Every structure is written in structure tokens, then in C-alpha cells.
Image 1 (cartoon, rainbow, N blue to C red):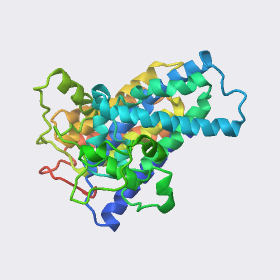
Image 2 (tube, one colour):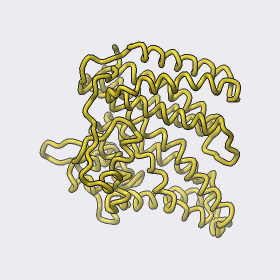
Image 3 (cartoon, helix red, strand yellow):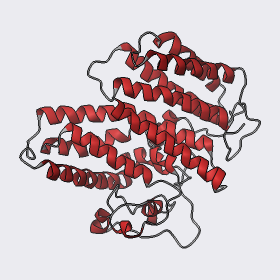
Image 4 (cartoon, one colour):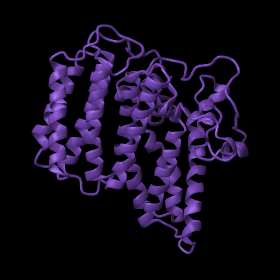
Length: 377
């Protein structure tokens, strides 16, 4: 399963690398708490609901495929899959902005106020669930599961790149591909711009269907959306939009509490948690065909860990205790049950448990909430 784990390693490397370049080379402020939230919100979707999406696709491809592409040359079939996937994404993305229930899912992505690579993985936990009906059409037509997964990874990699803060305009490529210059327009806090440039990889869908906008506003602008500030807890952030629909008068409590942790303590905890995410994906992939208790229990603890990190960013009193329980439960429950390779799990879980103990003893407690912090203290 290393082929599925490596994209996560690559994503972490480039997201953190860009943030360091922004702060240390270009002297821009980086909000590391926000970066941790972006990573935490995205990885649950990546290896939980993404697994459900792939499971559904594989089932339809195996039992209901019409086989219309079986006689096609491989190169032509791959080209079709590449274009058809992006065409489906364009309409899925466009509907996310125009249907209220889909916007409640997509809103989490647009609430990010800092345009950088971490924004590319900031998502509602339910994002992959909304894509299932669109991409099942490819399974019906006969695009094999392996081709679908490969094409998906390619497109998602391009979309991640299109959130970077460093790339200038790309010349002639701007006429064919969606670039960071195009996608910055889409994240402007103004509907005249955010309802443009829906394409994932190819910009010609927007030009064809009249949703193309070539440049940013001339006047000063900011990124994000209007409305309530989202929670730093990925579970609450993913469900806040739905709670607002059910109870319009409800307002989330996102004011930082007195137990807020420093950027270093939260960021280091997130990176340690991701070492286990990588191990999980390496060992289990996106599969759910033969699920045992270790897989589901590890999945649950990783999700709880991401919520605890969000609580630490917000300064919630329960968060440090929850983080300690999660980090201690992992080595107590799983060492001896997880197969790949034992030394990896033992070292990662031992360091994570030490981190939980240090946080519980008071390490990293921030004196006062701050807008942007560097992970150096």
C-alpha cells in the first residue's frame, strides 16, 4: 500500500516546506494553528470517507460496468478518464457553490483566510461523500478502479499545487490548465469572484461554460467567506454549517479559551499524529473489506486525536486531557497487533505518548491568544 501512503508523505513535505519558505525566506506571517487545522480537517476525509468512495466505485465497476471502454486502446481510455474525471469535478464543484446542502460541505474549504498549500487539504469531513454519485458514472462506463484511483491522485495533486502561495503566472499554461493565479480568484471573499473558476485541472471548462474570471480584483481584497468564525476542532467545523441550518439562531463558541497551546506544541503533535496516519494508510490502504477491531479502533483514536489538537488550538480545558488519553491508549492497545513494521509503530507511538505527557504537565501553554505564531517556542 506504499503507493497510497506516499502522496500523504509528499503532501506533508510540501505543505510544511512552503510554510517555512513563506516565514523564513519571504518574511511573511504564517498562522501555524490554522495550518494544523487545515491538515487535520483534510486527513480524516482523505483516509476515511475517501475509502468509502473507492469502495463504492470498485463495487459498481465490478458488478454494474457497461464495459463501453473495453475495446478502446489503453492510451485513449486513459485520456478519456483524465478528461471525464475533470469534467465531472467541474460540475460537482459548481454545484457545491449553488446547492445549499452541498455548500454546507464545501464551506469549510472556503473559510480558510490564508492562501497557501495547506488550504488545498482543508475540507469538510464529508467532501468525498458528495463526489460519489458523480464519479460512479465513470465506473458504469467501464473505467477500471486502478485507472480511477491513479487519475484521481493526479488531479488532486494538481489541485493541491494550485493552492500554493509562491508560483507566479505560468505563461501559456494559463490558457489550458487551472493555475494558482486562476484559483486565487476563486477564493476571494466576493461572490463575483468566488463563483468563478470552478475547474480542477483544466481551465477550458470554465471558458466553455461561462464561469471564467482571468484576474484578481483591482481593489484591496481578502480571502475567505462571510459569517461565523469556524471552530478549530475539525469535527465541529464540519458540522457547524448543518447546525446553523437546523437552528438558525445558534452561534458557535470559538473565542480562544485560557488553556490555548503554543504553535510548537500543537504543530509537533500534528506531525506525530500524521506518522501514524501514514502507517495506517500503508497497512490498511483505503480498504474496508476485512475490517478488524485494530483498524477501527486506530481509526477512531486518530480522529479523536485530531479533535484534541483542535481543542488545544482553541484553549479548551478538556483538550490536553483528551490528547493524553489518546496518546497513551495507542501504545497500550496496539503494539503487538499492528503488522507494518513493528519497530515503526513502537517508536512513533512511544514518542507520541511522551508528547501527550509533556502537554499534560503544562508544556506549550500559551500566555495569550495570538493571531500568527511560528513553531519555535
